[in-house]
Image 1 (cartoon, rainbow, N blue to C red):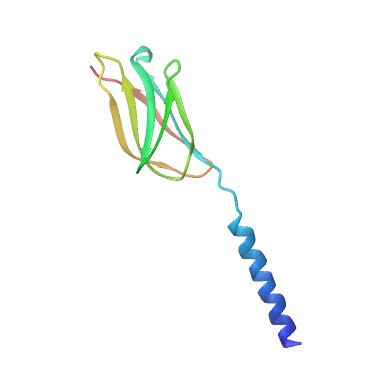
Image 2 (tube, rainbow, N blue to C red):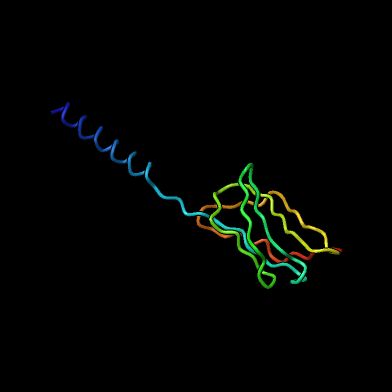
Length: 106
């Protein structure tokens, strides 16, 4: 009787660990706006060796499909405006981190 209970408990633990092993993770995102709208070309999220890049549309951007972690955001600008960089942006699973409005400087 005791060995049957142990077998059932062991099987339950294996099943429970198996369910967590195949848990899906929903990616996060970084979003925001840039002014002046005509000065911004693209937005990049950089984490280690991973880089995701999107074009800025009408001053808005959303870099999607990001793994949870810490990112550096780079906004590429056209002259006479300077590129913008911000480090330490935290992205969590299933959440969009809003960096707000970014004002490009000349």
